[in-house]
Amino acid sequence: MSASNEEPSQRNESDASTHHEEVSFGFERVSPREKTRRVGDVFQAVAERYDVMNDLMSLGTHRLFKRMVLQMSGAREGHRVLDLAGGTGDMSALFAPVVGTSGRVVLTDLNQPMMRVGRNRLQDQGHAQVKFCQAPAEALPFADKTFDCACISFGIRNFTDKDRALEELLRVLKPGAALIVLEFSSATDPVLQTAYRAFQTLWPPVGKLLVGDSQPYQYLVESIRMHPNQRALKQMFDDAGFVNTSFHNLVGGIAAIHRGERAAEDAHSANNDAPNAER
Image 1: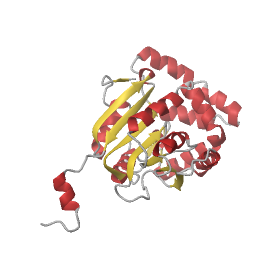
Image 2: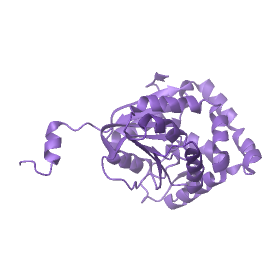
Image 3: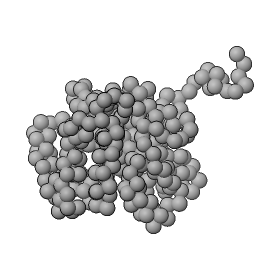
Image 4: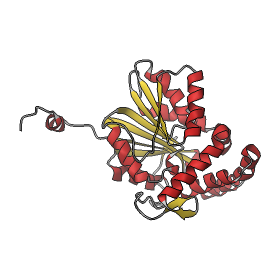
């Protein structure tokens, strides 16, 4: 795993706020409402076989990548962790024993079928400290400064409004807390990029064999290609107000881990926020 700053800073998709007319759904331009609905349909279709396809799409390496996210999070016993777009619960299962019975992991996802798979799995594993919340990333139903860290694992590219979601994540994190985002990205080597795109052409036909429909997997291919590259996503972290932002390429940039923090409050800010502070 190595840091990289070689990619050109550009965005492949418009991350307009949800009140703007159109956003991308794969290669299509649709209304924000339509994207939210269609992304929901995609993950409803693949929920039961989602982990199998993750193994295929990452050649099994996603499990190692998720452990890297855990290591970079700074989570420890007693912490509150937000697992956003937590879906089938892989990250929540990793965080649960770290935060222990005195901590809490909140698996939050907009898609009910995905979350149902995650809930059943986590309850079977005895992770009582994992709670569940169905909500959009752009309007999190949590108080300011609630969480000690947050993560998104292979989910941010599906958000209707990434900029708004990052602002919400900053709001609900405690000062000094980290956001870790694991996502497919852009290979730094053109030869590797070409080879991986050829590999991606297999996903829709394999998806058809698994769930009887190739279209959800065609969307997954297109969503990866339209997702902002490493430097562009880092800039989005910066624009949202995160500090100490960085990214680390995995497998030559096919995937990347982004990290940013909510700025720590200095003594002056803390005094100004206190209800009885002298003016």
